[in-house]
Length: 340
Image (cartoon, rainbow, N blue to C red; front, side):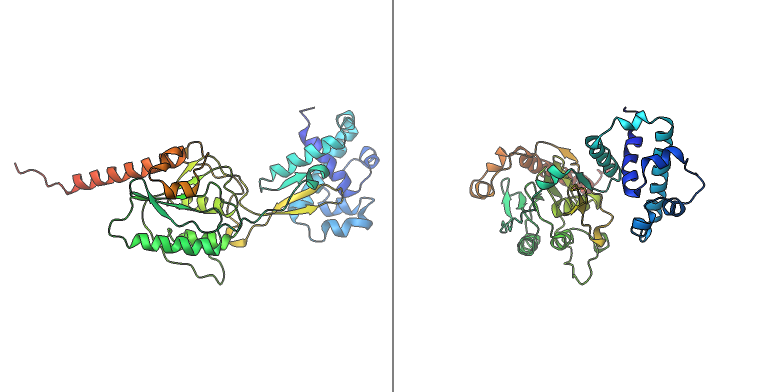
């Protein structure tokens, strides 16, 4: 019955509204009735009407009314279209409905809900930035946004900015970066973006813009949480290119809410200052296999070892090429026209 996806979704409303199916088959719904009037007239109104409508949004009231109206007509005119579905179909239907909200919310059945584990905090130690590719490119690996990693990265950027011969570009590797410290993430963003491009966090002082060199951010499907926010805002603000594969698509920590049925919702906890961020994965501007990712110890201990990491090698080649192109353009602009 692929032609009836909406009808299936409507099954949910009958349980929510606590209205017996026989009511729908004997009393046609009046389209002109308001959502409040419709719910108030249902047999279950005295028991749960206040819960349904007390703080309900206009959208919720209207959608409940329309869903119940449609399912009543289907039961009345084509009961076989609904009678064949069971609880297993109900889970699929509700998942489709939740997915249609396009807000990063997940609906899980009771069995799947029981297997959900809490996010594990990495508490990764700072990795000092190093210069690679024959001393031409600055490489910084961030495996978690936290205060310690931010402080070290900020110091490294300031030190690099003061060099007489600065690297031609910066690679920020967040291919294995998880965690949800948005404050450290946004403070890191401020090192590269103009103040007006940085989200404002109440009572948090932002650092000034520090380093102005071309930036490439390396991402992959292990890039999750605050690192996705960082990569997206850097890209949207025109401060970098993003290389690798799509990120995890989970920029916000999800709160598990168990429903009365035993099923559950995973609802993103979105800070107000990030409310405009899409709850989707970040797509790279340069597509290349993100893994295997070279170990930081190997990269920092052996010159030329970046060549074993294809994603990293592509980024270094691009930065060096961009620098050569810019120098060539500058030289051409400085050339004086020959006298006639």
